[in-house]
Length: 67
Image (cartoon, rainbow, N blue to C red; front, side, top):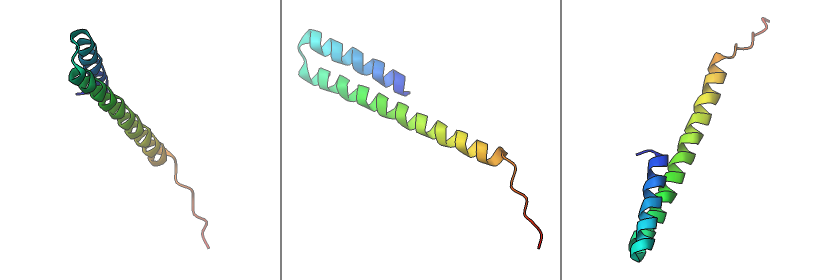
C-alpha cells in the first residue's frame, strides 16, 4: 500500500478505536499512520535521488584539454 493509504487506514482505525474505547485499535491506527508517513518520506527521497541522477546523466560532460 502507498503512504497515503496507510495514513488514511490508520486514521480510520484510530477513530474507530476512540469511538469503541479500544486502546489497541487506537495504537494500531497511530502505528499505521507512522508507517504511512515513513513510506512517503522514503518515496520522496527516492524521487529526489532519481531526479538528481537524471540531471547528472543529462548534463554534458566537461571537455578534456589535450596535452
